[in-house]
Image (cartoon, rainbow, N blue to C red; front, side, top):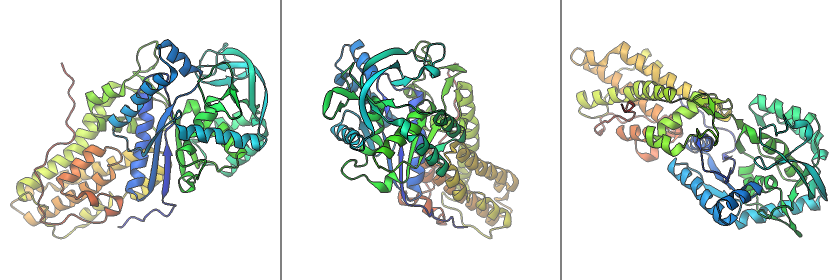
Length: 509
């Protein structure tokens, strides 16, 4: 049955947070980026004009301190660390269209223009600040939010007194609450939306948006003794990358998704929409906050030395298996635990035994008994049609993608793979070679056609393996989009020699 084409606007803008350059990349950075990459790949395959942005956040007191500790100038320091994040994007084969740095002229121009808009519209005023500041979070906290003398995140705080510009955040409390009610999809998952609503309902205070005690930042227009608050600077990246202030590309902005860690949701779901409202700019479509990973049940930290290096993991287990594990293991939005035993189980059970074995046994048998050609089908029986219908999944997958239910995408696809394995065991094509070769060929054709569809649909999740499977079915690269699902393999066409794509993982003894 043909799948309907999407009827929404055909532009899609997806962003990772820009990663803070006071440290090296870890598995949390890779997790966010790979999730965004899966979403971007899916939308491209579904015919959307996709803009996928990632980058680095390079200003602030924390960076200045880290540069001093490394005996480098701040610019030298951020150049080196930003390159580490760019290299990680290359190593993980992200399909990002842009990589933005907050030290770039295009970004500084946009941040200063946004500041000027806030000044011109009467939403920023000069005063002086005295309060608790967490350097690690680059965030101010009222006394009421401190827990045992620390920020809610556990970061140490220090008392700061200095001249400061303030943003009239308090004036936006009711506007934000009204916006959340009118746009219930803006913050997801729902538990995070409720958390943000409670925070805003508790009352908003004007926000200090400049600093004078250090210099590494974007200078405030007209008063270079001040630098812009790092979050006002950083959040602007989402629009500076799509043309602001010269010509904001609204086709992307109106269909935008910010994927962030739950620890920075407040900045994206409270401060950012307030800044945009104050500048008379449109608000992004959705902010999705995902959870954190632990390592074998223990929170990752520098002090424990248990942070997971994504490059080491990928070198050991492979990129597709790491993608699959991270995106399948937990509902996107929940916290999860990175367990080596769970990863190996997923690799050997889901990838090798289920998907890989399905492909290998079918294509190897076709190579052997069908002269390495696509089998010729006879009568398609109800059982055959039922199997083909089981992979008519595109509309279901679209809903899961739009809800950021990435694990459900995996579960849905692997249900179809399980159906195919059951079908083989029930119909036993190998037993029909002599007694009913026409029926055997039909069964093999149906299985090859199902594998083609599954491989097209798994491209956003395990892209390298999916491409290899499609190569083995001689599917031309220009016929691997979702719109090609309803085309069929050409009976009698030549197939290459098959090979395994998901080897079992055996730990070195």
